[in-house]
Amino acid sequence: MPACSAAAPSDPTSQQPDPVISECTADPPCSGAAADKQGNPAMCVQAVDATVVSSAGLPVSGFHATLCGNNLCKNAQSDADGKLHFSVCQYMFHPALDVPGKSAYVTYAIPIPHDLYAVGPCELVPLQGPGDLLETQAAAHTYSAAGVSLLVDGGTEVQVSEINHPEPDDRKFRAARLPQSAAPTLAQTSPGLELFYGLAPTGSKLAKPARLTVPNPDAWPAGTRVAFYLQGVPASDGGTGAPADWLKVATGQVDKGGATITTETGISYLALVGIKRL
Image (cartoon, helix red, strand yellow):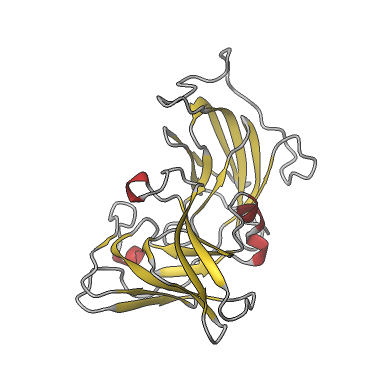
């Protein structure tokens, strides 16, 4: 089951056959600024539908997701059939469906390219762990989960939002690979990325880059050069702040034994990681 099979309503291959219905009554249908101060255009978003499913393909009810752009967010909760509906009728900059997994699932975002858009089944991919509590430590420490490790230098200041991760267990390191079946849509909307790993607690910041090592499931040859990207990096940390945008943050290579892939410098923000060969 793909993590999110995105398809416009006019696409006959869409996994969500029901048309997206606009509830906008104004003409033109969207309110707000159609461009920013620099003249960059916004998108008129009328409505977006999606379906949330478990790893077994069953609908998940009561799941809270957001439709966010750089200028506003809309919230929705899935119904008994796992369906989400966002009635927007506003201009948005870089709109995306944000699937916030918190400490249970991989967090990821899918860009919205049309004013009326249907996103197919969005799979909730379970995180594995928990590992150790992510916090500032005097000595160097390696956090591990699901074959993923993060080596943080001693004395590195670690910031974990207690608002987004209120319980101590929520602030423990977790990770998971999005399986091959979950990656197609993310790959299609990314800069050529081939592997994806979710890291949590999502949104955590490190004052110094930490060396990231992940498994090499596709057996890329030892020494293969790669680039690491992060999704949804805030503007304050060098990204655009848009949930679905990608930022190149590091380079690395497949290790000598061929079993793992490691950054040369590291990452300083925890989010969905995308990797591609150079």
